[in-house]
Figure (tube, rainbow, N blue to C red):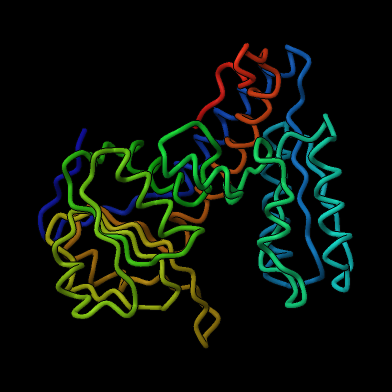
Length: 303
């Protein structure tokens, strides 16, 4: 059922509950793969000891284990060389017990993240950042899709939010969220506008959106008064204030007074990111177990 909330009827989209459902479905798929002799395996590469990355990786490890995925975390020293890190990632690419490879970003300053990502086997690139997966998304071809954008679309689907024919405004142009979510929205036949923190009269652009995706990383950048009555707002921003609390890119309460549906921070898009990581890992394992067609492509592989 489509959400068509009027002003003052803002509905919170519960990412925790939706992610729990996705994770339960993934666990069921893992059981089916295990029955076929395939245990999905996820390798997480965490360089150094960044506190935020430690928390993210711990959450991913726990969620993967609960879903029945064999997960292991590799922890190279913060001083690891570019060559050694790329060699580690390449070795995981030929390890048949590993179906998903995730290199936790950001990396220490002396490392070239792009080079490390390119060393990942595209079929195991569960973050969807390898150039071949980026190209596949842009060309509407099978590939692994970045987890956060995929989570945004999944939230809309699970809550009956129609995208076809809607005007979607994406605030943010990062390769991790802004650009891929725009591609996914286009694939759903939405009309997409991409803008960012330097867009002139940003409020006017945002106010035209039936769907607004905020992914800039600036707390409260999107003001509640900008939201079109009845719009769907997906807040991807995670910003920690001086009081230690997490806030999104959107003024939550003011926006909720106008929106038809909105994701909170925390508890909105964030949990979906982990759930879609597990789904990507399971999908990669399933694709690896399928027979290879005469064209050399794995039968049944896709997004």
